[in-house]
Image 1 (cartoon, rainbow, N blue to C red):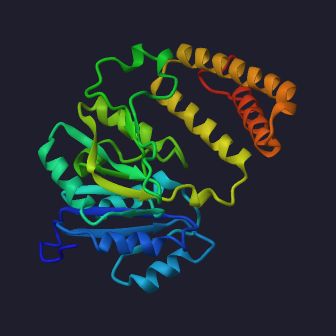
Image 2 (image 1 turned 90 degrees about the horizontal axis):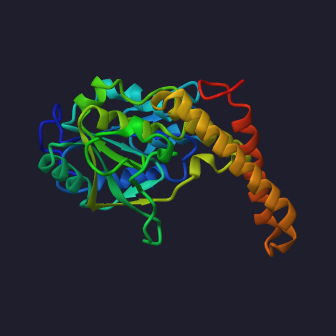
Amino acid sequence: MQTGKDKSNPDLSIIVVTYNTATLIERCLDSVLAATGIAADIRVVDNASSDGTAGVVCRAFPSIPCIENDENVGFAAANNQALPDCTGRYILFLNPDTEVTPSSLAAMVSFMDGHPAVGLAGARIVYPDGTPQWSVSYHYPSERYARKELLDLPGEIACVLGAAMIARPDLVRVLGGFDDDFFLYGEDQDLCLRIRRAGFEIGVVDDAVVIHHGGHSEKDTQPADVWKKKVYAEYLFYEKHYRPETIRRIRRADIIKAGWRLATLRHCSFLEKDRTRAKEKLEKYRVIYHAVRHYHGSGSEG
């Protein structure tokens, strides 16, 4: 990483939000510091980790500012905490369970310089073994029910995975940053849609390769609780962007689908060779069924 440029206006400001990632954060920050071709400043926001993550950052990287929250305020709110202090021409939201390849940050900056119509772009995300990871979507959740709400949006990409996203800071600030109501999951989709509604496209930087270990902050969370969070985030997205009648249609479809899956899994579980996997599937759809049925929002029928 170049340090000779004006530090008051670096190419890139990088925000890393951590939560119980003590075993990975050094590799993440080392990879950022080893990146070539750009000047960058880095900021860490720790969401009250119980595994000493903040201490690792302070000891191993004393020059990197680290905000230590007294409680877990969520991914969106923690990113927003660091936004006012970012002075880079672009801002990169980077997960702590990632490692950037040496030329990836320079590639992302170059891409944004050459594509003024793009407001936010993602990297090419791969697993540690190098295989591609899903990181680009051309559709929003349940989009087939919400065609009227999603007309005339610029570009073809709906959203990119939030593990590594570069954006124009002035645009992000005008939009109010991430929506704090999204605690975890869904905040990347929401920000991407708001950026498109502001007239900008979403892009992908194929030359920027980022390794994503994935799922580390939720490794101690029960699968049922993870699914509850995902259902909540999805319906919060609907509440923000879809009409009440659209949400009612989605809700009915989700209840029918989850109910059908539950019925078939119960009756056919004896055919599953992997009983543990069958049990996990059953629990997943049980959680979804009850979460959607007990949802009370504009798409709820009471």
